[in-house]
Length: 124
View 1: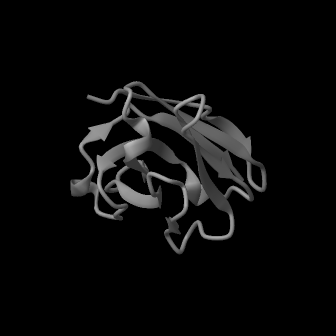
View 2 (view 1 turned 90 degrees about the horizontal axis):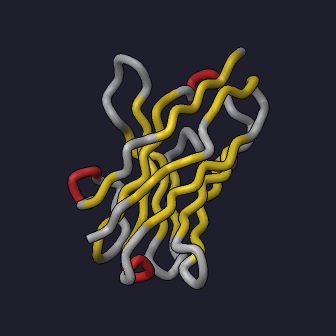
View 3 (view 1 turned 60 degrees about the vertical axis):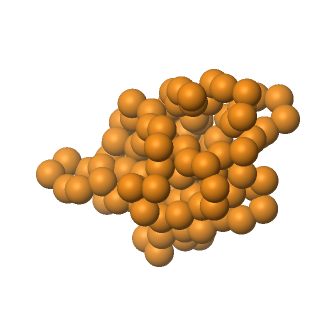
């Protein structure tokens, strides 16, 4: 069982930065691939980025590649981070982290555990 709690959301101006954190409980955190997804108002939840259990593999959606960076700390904190730079109004959404056993995937259906989400709002 893995419990996930996101934090770090807030209101920022376009061009600004935020760093989201996802704290995970459970002794086997290091064996889970992690992902970030987001859901904007009136839209379906979409994939943002994923990282493998080791941190050696990452993949980004085209619309965030080059601006967002995912990383993880398995050793001490059991935390996954999402560094978001050059934020745009279209990045406004609730951001969710998710965990799955096995390899990373962009498919939401592959993730077994989900956090409650953290709101990110970007003003123009």
